[in-house]
Image 1 (cartoon, rainbow, N blue to C red):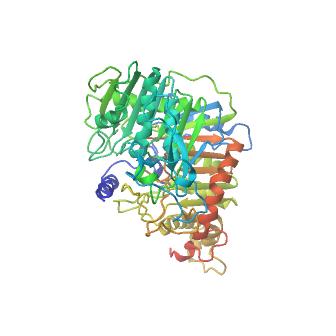
Image 2: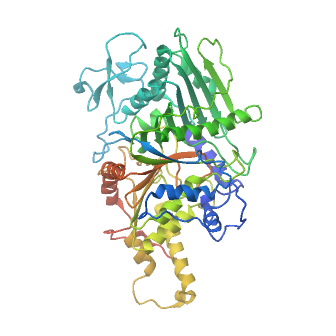
Image 3: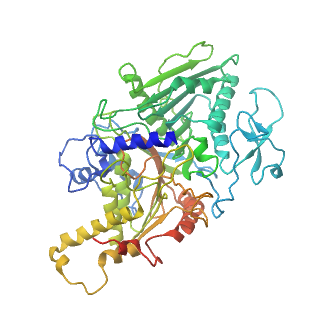
Amino acid sequence: MFARILFLLVLAIVGSCSGDLPSSAVSDSQAERDFGILRPSTSIVALVKDRDLRPPDLSAPDPLQQLQRELAKSDPNGAFAGITYDLTRGNNLAVDWLVQTPNRWGRRADDLTWFEIGCKDCEADISLPACSTDADCRGGTCTAIWQRTPGLQTAARKVCLGHSDALPLRIHDLVASARQSVDIVELQPAPNGRFTAALRAAVAELAFSRRKVEVRVLIGQFPPKGVDATAFLNELVESARNIPGSRVTLSVSAMRACTVLESCNSFSWNHGKLIVVDGREAIVGGHNLWTEDYLTDNPVHDLSMQVRGPAATSASRFADRLWSYVCSNLDYKDSISLASFSAGQSEIGQRCPTALATRRAAAGTGGVETMGIGRLGAGITDDFANQSELARDLMFAAARKTIRVSQQDLGFRLGRSDTLFPENALDEMIDLMERGGDVYVVLSNPGSIGNGGSPYHNDVPLRAVAKRLKDKVQKRIDMADPRSRYTIRTGPDPVNALLCSRFHLAPFRFGPDDSWPGGKTISNHAKLWMVDDRIFYIGSDNMYPVNLQEFGYIVDDRKAANTLIESYWNPLWQWSSRAAVSGEGVQECIFREIIK
């Protein structure tokens, strides 16, 4: 409960204090035209108009290359090319590239197997029950995992996995495969429980392998408490510290770019979630490495992806930029800390790691075109480097059939007297609906809170989202014909007619139940958008406006898009649409309930 109160206090401070609004929150009527001047606070809507940015033509070849050219116009000196926007080819997606937890579509809420931390008969490091077969696991799966002591030729041990416990194993296997480098970028709090166990075991295996591997862990921290970088480093090296012949080096940083109380006119810290190995393979998306929220009861639903090829280097290059900021400000800012360890070292030091993206992986042999896309928020640079939102809005403007969105929220209100929305993105959605297209949006449920205390809802009810959209459409009608508001209407309300038929809005469901046993609401933490069932984004960047550092991937690949639709979107909409408040087949459309 204390963690929840602390988190809400932080968000209240972020929302209520003065400071620059996030780029995506400024509407056309609010935008100032400082043509030729690009700042972190430059609004997306002004940037698109002033720089004459054009959406890609999806009927023409290579829309991501078109997008790359338009994004470059927001970066006239090329300072952020390869950092916040980086188009690569030759990437490969394995059969299991889509990482969704829990992947239990259609199950009842009381039918998810999970295991308590500290359970009886558990393997102590991973806190999962030992087993011989699936029959020992009460609905879970019996799976072989890493050895207790790395390097010993002992029989593989087996443990029971609950609904999402395969994720720490996946992370362990990726990290343990490193030959040169590991990049881990996450949000406060530091990885814990089974995730820490997986990382600790992987680091020990790297130490035993005697490969020379640089491991960097960067954790975005928000006030007031932050992260103890030294304590987490000690957890990671606990099993590797005394392994003979080890050549592993580890660095852990806790960082915050700024707050209005420190060095900029905003609030900004890292919110990205990525794990990169050797610049050749990466897991990127929405997953925080928090055991209580993801691996036990009432789990948060989330989405990430795993890619092999040069796109992994894009992620590591983004991490390089964050580390450059850390190392440049280490002696000047109390909001940045660093702890380092090298094999044979008796005490924790404070050595800045080297850049890793220079160790470029060989060109990929796959056929998946991928754009690494990010934002630097505030405090890291005085220039505009928020290409993530810009790319999203340009792609929304390119849509001709559908926009599909799965998010925690579209609005941000916690601690504010008003509500912030991604104004330009909403306008692009309305443009599509006016062209005859459809918009599908699935959001987290009101009051969603993880077991660790973090909120997964921004105090913005579906009614508030609907009202903002309705006001926007009504404003367009009034501007087109100022006298229309005084005209006696004889037919259907055109605003309701458009939104009730074309805007499909629903709270998240994964099966027949509206909540978890005991009444806790179901949380959605995915950050997905998709255009015309073809081009999609998976990453850390929420659509609701906040000014943080973010990273994700935009993918243009029809096979991958089909996989995403079949294995994620279709079951998501099948179950969520049963609670839809607008769209085709909804009798009591929420837009009709809202009085202008």
